[in-house]
Amino acid sequence: MKRIVSLLLIISLLLCSCAGNSAKNENQTSDYKGKISYQSGFTNAVWLSFFEISELVKGKTEEEFREEIINLCANLLSIRSDTLIVHAVAFCDSFYESDLLMKSKYIKSKTDFDVFDVICDACVSAGIEIQAWINPYRISSAKDLSVLKNNPTVRKLYSDDSNNLIITENEIYLNPAGKSVQRLILDEAREIIEKYPVGAIHLDDYFYPDMTSFADRKSYENYKKDGGSLSVENWRRENVSSLISSLHTLTSQNNVSLVISPMANTEKNYSLKFADIPLWLENGWVNTVIPQVYFGFENENAPFEKTVDEWVSLTENKDVKLVIGLAFYKCGKADPNAGSGKNEWLDNDDIISRQIRLILQKNTICGVAFFSYSHIFGKNIEKVAKKELQNIKSML
Image (cartoon, rainbow, N blue to C red; front, side, top):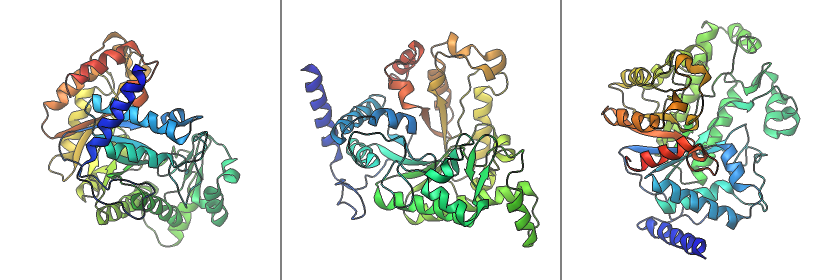
């Protein structure tokens, strides 16, 4: 009985928080109260990944899932979070109702309904901004050729031109050089913006895969035959930059932000992912950048404060918000890539809170983003994560 009363109280509070909203856009798929005006200020964001959505929706009806999301919103509000970064496209599939992409295989609900719509509806009522998170090019994290048959969008792209895909020994990606690939990603973003009350289109660090095998050789050779003169590295960067520029135009026209969440290592973004972030910032194509600074203070290769300062310098005097991505998922676990600092997250229960304290001292940083929801509020989170949750509740 207490649980039911508590749930009803949460629902009442959330429903009462949406006063002043305008009429529903005719393209939206639910009775939203309209797009809310998101306040500018210090961002406090949380990622909700495809895996987490899958766990929340598994075996549930629409109403049961809605209860889960209302509880999620209550959890976010308990840490004063104002932004939820929600997977919309993870593997050239969709977590929203799409005319372009197949429904994600990770949605295994009891009844058929629009998962993204339910999340948006609850978040709008709670005053929480939704950022639609798109992995722009990733199709499969393994060399799973069955996707060429099972995913209709991928099958058509491959049938039209096999060069639309990059197939390596470890993964399958859309080829950023393909014009039809770029159109598809732009159409995905446009479809989401038109149907849902999102505050931003959010891309993470899945740009080019590992290209040591030169898996896009034929595409580059065709480019050279057509008179292209760029090196293969600069050609790849131009391919990704072309998409970012086009997304900037699209989002700007629709009064929506473009958010990029790259790797923390600026050199690897440029040389391995072929993401020319300095160019994007110089041209004003990105509204917010959220580097994934998933390192501790004692990380031997990339200590937290030094890495943050690099991003502060990179964004200085640029028309862009800098928000720092923090690794809640590392709390209470060893970090084998941190060298001599590999046990830092095991031995300390205040790393996240110390990181926030440092960030708050740097007046050019506009917020934090936590990866990810289940590592903060999950049922089986580490004891250290529980302590960090209490720490940040007293800070934010």
